[in-house]
Length: 154
Image (cartoon, rainbow, N blue to C red; front, side, top):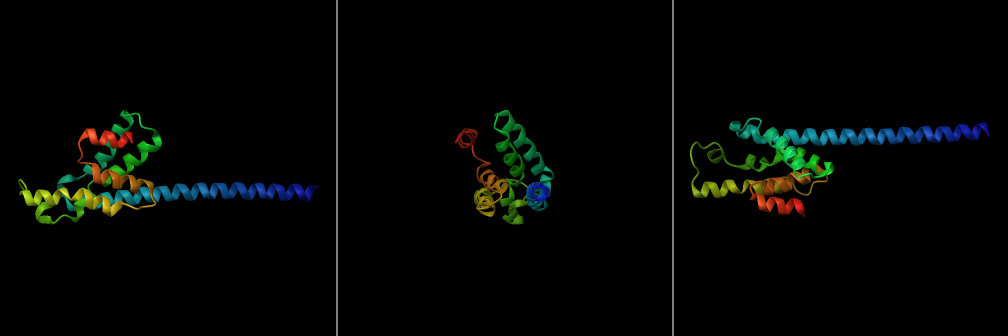
């Protein structure tokens, strides 16, 4: 009986360790995902120095707006973490357009408008939920409010 209890205790102990290890790995993976997102957002800021801290502010605004819409926490978090990647497509824009002083020509403006679809292409098909959300945000962040509300309601 003593040996049997000992084995049962060992099994429970190993199961507890396994659960704690899985939880720790999950937290580590999530932290790594968030770190990568912050680094990607920094890429867009390096390319356009006039927008320093813009992406960080967008993430904060996303959190505030999502909460104001009473979205559930499991929706608010990916939106606020993925939000800073909204302009990642700008990293593919030529300097002559991205850094141009003054208004863009129609051709330049049309090219700049493509940063949303480029951003989506850069981020889509990820296994990381935050990045999948970021892909949607990158594509739609210049949509009208009515369209954005339709997307959130879906």
